[in-house]
Image (cartoon, rainbow, N blue to C red; front, side, top):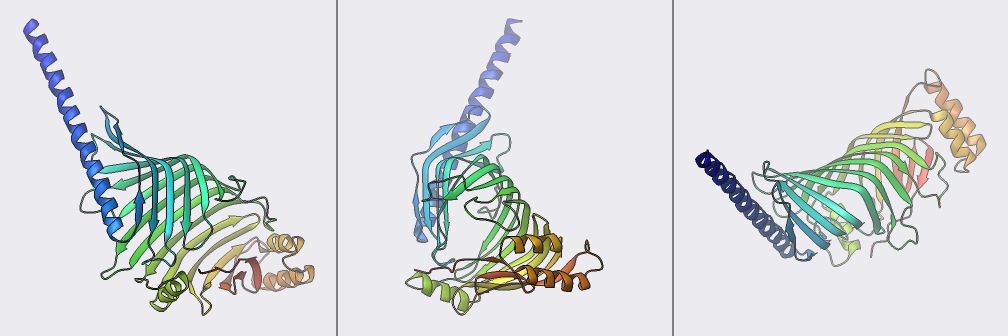
Length: 339
């Protein structure tokens, strides 16, 4: 009996030591991969900063907690580049599943794309899952819940809320520079800033889209020159599928976007719309269009549709910073101020 007890204790000790060794190996490799990735990004012109990682997670997972994460760059693929920061990132890999890496963001994050205003946001859940193996990761899946955010320098940090968000990203570097990327996302229960009167209501029930980006290598001393280089090099964004449910309006469509002669976003597409009657009434009530124009549009669209509840298909355009459905202006945007 004592012999079997001794053997059992020895086996348990061996398993514990093996698991501890595996944990140490996994966390060491994760930290080395983090350092290698940061070095590659710095060599490509990025600014990357993070605090010394802290190891944890034993005995079930290999975990690195990284505080004060900041990165900025990407001007070769996007005019003005991008900047992102997070209070804390937790990278974790289950020792029983070393082929998937989970990355959880904690605290506040900030994001700036090109020269759009920087936004600050936080979430009850913000988790990315990355498949490993076969070279560098090319695809990641991201989920978030109870997201709140707003402009970084705004006194209010909860101007926008998203109940649920899911994103899938895939990116491939082009030979000689540039990038081809794909993104699919779906958001539900979107609360819009109440500082603006939204003609179709202050909340969007759902918004989903699939986006592909073809970006050449961008050159230029400032963002205006970079934007022109992006446009002249054939930079383009395609939206093969789009689904919007906002107030009484439901839209399904597609679009192609680029930069116009004034380096402002422009594009064309198609939209299949239902609920256009109540939506036109809401636009008239908000003063976006006049009551007479709303009545005219309703009469014309009523002739196209089989009945008031039927869908109609209309051209979707973004021109002169105005998004229009057919001849109906839906929203006006501020011009991008390239620096």
